[in-house]
Length: 322
Image (cartoon, rainbow, N blue to C red):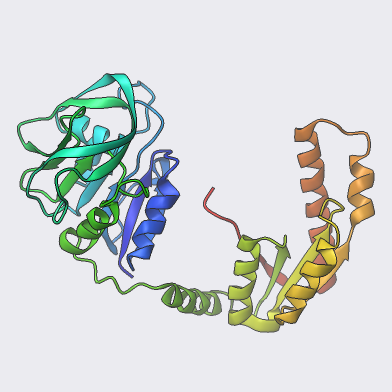
């Protein structure tokens, strides 16, 4: 399955980049910069995220971009653009005034990335450094009144950098820019949908789990509930779910959520352990110690329930990237 890999340098917008790509019918995958090594054969392009650090810091997040340049199209955003510029011979300096907020493009050069984007298009800036200069192999493709190098490309490559954030709502042509990158530059087929993701996930689970049993703890939240439904579609009654009342839920939440799970056909049992948790937390005021106590009690209860089922090989877990 074709995909766009998003290298995460710690940006608050990384999840939003992934969402925007998926909204454009292309599967995206977030990879922390510390975990990135090689380009997956299915990768059609790479987006380098923003980040809170300065690329000039000695311990700044970093990857060797030269290892991937020219192999697949690259789009660097904010920190990613500055890292790209620095590693290709550019100069990065501290901004006299932190660029944060709306700006308007004053120059838009012809390029595949900015196709259909007009001068005066609003963009969203959020950076403390700025690209002072780029090497001769690079070309400026966008500017604002305050930022001369708001966007650049590397000659003879499908490699681009933007010092603004096209993924946020405030960049009026941001979706168009991302679509240009996916369609015109990466040549993505744009055939991915949530329905296809569900179908593939269910198929993968069936192939991996087979007829074996899976134990899953449900919290009542979105993440574990989605994981439970995918597993339920794949293995049915071989999924054993437990919803634990830890005594810290809202009024009637335990009963209401348990009834909701049962109504959709999940093989689920409620575990009313309110007294176990409350007794363990009595007299404890330190928040970190409370978290550890709650976590340990959950583990103890899950271990007990797993033994009561017998023959459980898999532990189901549903959570978001963080």
